[in-house]
Length: 450
Image (cartoon, rainbow, N blue to C red; front, side, top):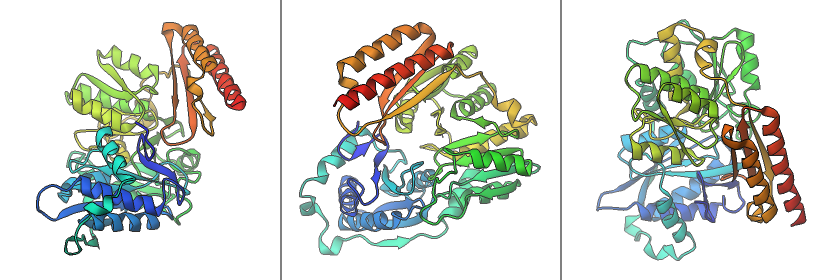
């Protein structure tokens, strides 16, 4: 679902431009507040944010809307997205709000909503909220004596740190490990280094000085080069890169090689399968995950379930079919024994647990399969629907035929940016590149003609 406001991961866009304006944020607060009122109790909202400058504007606008709907707002300040999901349940709140554009640059922002169960909202609930935004919802707002209150909540960082630590056995210590953690100048800049240190690791923290403008700027999970360099410089055992709201993670081994979400899922799935913990006989990922992961799981008689892109759809499939490991190649890892959404820190802790149990370096543990050659290219668009044009459809069909059964082709519009993503994979890298380039070329020609 991609409506006028909501995309694949809440509402997202350029800060102070449609749809990420203070006015719309306030109306989202009103609509969400009204949608989650049930019973006669004082209704609660937990509201967190990351470290981008526009967070102040969006936060205050959301508070105004939520209070106008009669909701009491607990302000958490800068805190990871998975912490908001956890605190919705811990504080018995009726709704959770995270103000973040995740891995996007500082000039973007977004609004993610969680229900009282800590899960992201379904398409149906988002559609209902979206349908209220352009109506006269002021008529349904609280009376003067029923307005909500807002207050800062202390100790939320400590709650999340304790929650993360409890995902490991009480007897497990990270003593003896030197860890570099890159917090992307984002929401995890306090909690991630502290949690790792409390577990006994020697911690080297980088990109932990947010200034409102440097979130994700040449750092974090989408730009791990700085982490790779630091791991080599301090001779660390492992590097952990989180993104701006810490719901995704990328690992760097002791040699500086990157370990993506597919390899992390393979490592955790194998470990949990061997210990009898893996539920549902498989793993859930998206259409973007590498064919190598599917083959690796198949060798263990496990199934890879694929969904459309978005960790929300991964979680929905996990819940519907009783699986407890899922995620995305980009590093959203969902471990439903612990969390209701992607959690970069908790996922990294599971990797660290494997290291401690097996006493082997990351480079040996994390190379679970040889990735099938895969190529992804993005085509920026300014409007229109190029994927509905006849020449593009024909090029896509031809590409599928060329790849045959030994490869895959995925073409989709981005849910967060004005892009068409063209991805192909197969055992012949030259064929993969040719197929992607041909389709990209046709899309560009169609875009130019339009």
